[in-house]
Length: 358
Image: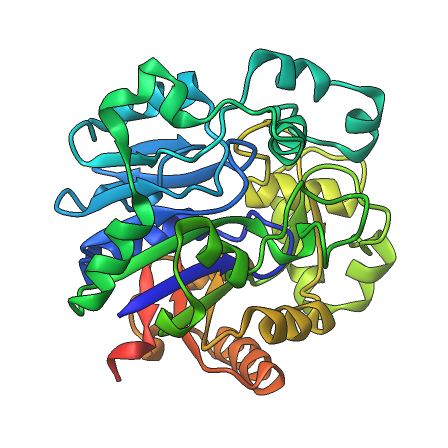
């Protein structure tokens, strides 16, 4: 069984939490990281410790799984080695020998005025991908620091799939940041859809059984993007649900000059990589439907339900969800026309309503 996990909106959907849950619940033989590179941060909690990872898959929480970074992923050597040390995954983490390396010069180039305008993470991914396209990049097989980690990741992944073992692919960022399908030029430096995630790790499309597309119960975006309609004070005032969320923010004394900033503080919304505050927007159904279509979603995952409906924090059964939350979820599933199977209700790996078990 091969499953791919991708973001459905603009990143920050909680892929790290979902991947860590699937890693523990489905016990994959191989968990492979796809995506752009270290410009996306995924957060996961293990044994009460918070990990903000940029290179390794959040599936490391399953100590029996082999971990891999696919050939399509850019590698920051220092970041990678630091994360191997922090997560204690030496001996079971592998890097495809064809990954290209982010150099210091790429990070410097990523601090250009255009990069600042777009709001990049300045992690060197754009220039790193440009170097690869121009055939001047250094590959992992040429980096002595990575020699003990090198592997043929497509062989690993496909061998496991052929044996009928569980394989989990973790993509990065979100569909709305796709170089092809996002709000150009406010996008990342490659496509972020499930098809490209498969190519990143060397999987053919006929080998994929499930595509999990993850959405938040609302949207958030770090960086610039004038095409997104962020929640305004007027929007909040017209919507009873958002009005109640703002009231909670006010009661908690959240700082901010407007409703959006107060709600962002209430939700704890800031970028994992940059630390920059995120802006909040209501769930975009049109974008979600398009994302589901292009990604070929077979299952929908919804996260941060507990932030919109705090009474649902830590709930692990559908019956335990509040009436308002169920109404919200039923409306979403009806409009998406794809089964909603996983509902995240908190930061802990086990805070999940898993409807696949029905």
